[in-house]
Image 1 (cartoon, rainbow, N blue to C red):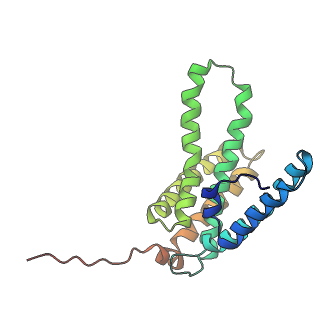
Image 2: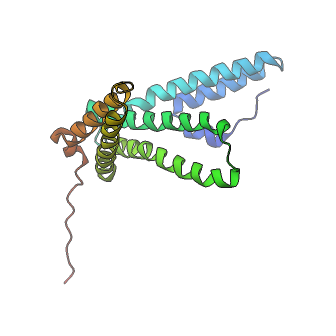
Length: 197
């Protein structure tokens, strides 16, 4: 007896993990229905997911030629994604405290979510070596740094530590993305066009 599984999902896995996935389901089928079977499947899938992450990280941190990406580029890309995740969390915690009508709040929430997702979009673009994402990240960091400077002026000296840390991060992002070793990884290969006579 074996459990039904999605062949499309299994075919997307690497060969060694595909066999592992099918084995987890087949062994779960031998267990009695209930908690034991669910825990077995959950544990097996968690282990497969961990192995996928272990395999995927080296692929994510290398370019199409197999060369490892600069460490500062990886730090900036990860920071951009985490920054968006943190802001989305802040918005999520504020939702229960909204007192306006939902018809008025939803457009504002949609705009806020769009804006806070931008750093994550730029971060993914940096992982993919998209030069537009590099330039956009620099512009975003300059704007964010100017806002941090304004916060320092308004809130000094009570709450100055947070904007100072933000300003340091923005400075690091700009410095890292302007370095020659990073900029050179974003160069588009030269294409030659030949006109037909």
